Length: 115
Image (cartoon, rainbow, N blue to C red; front, side, top):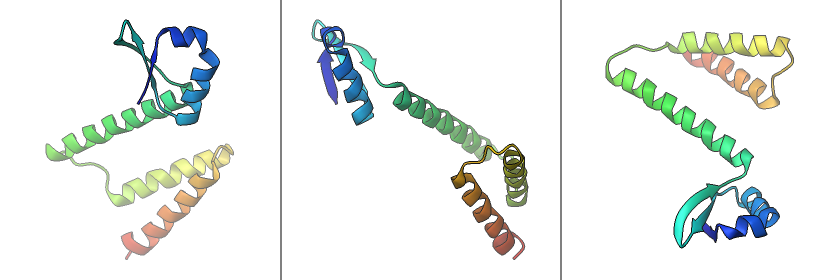
């Protein structure tokens, strides 16, 4: 945990910004010895926000499952993913890892779902 006095942000902005980017951790700023603010670089912030959103979605799905709500079957998920990959491929917006994931899902579907 990195803790600095609030005056440090004014005096050493570039140093604090670089430390945020390098460590990918927030810096806690104090005022009069008490916690006041948290500072982090925008990339780390965006990663954390995406992770929190994913966790919220997973929690929601798990709550639905525990209530007995049905979700998608493996076949439906595989079909949805293939369609999404095809659509993205047509627009040339598919990063290499997504193509690999698509191939893995297709292989899984062929080997497991069709048995």
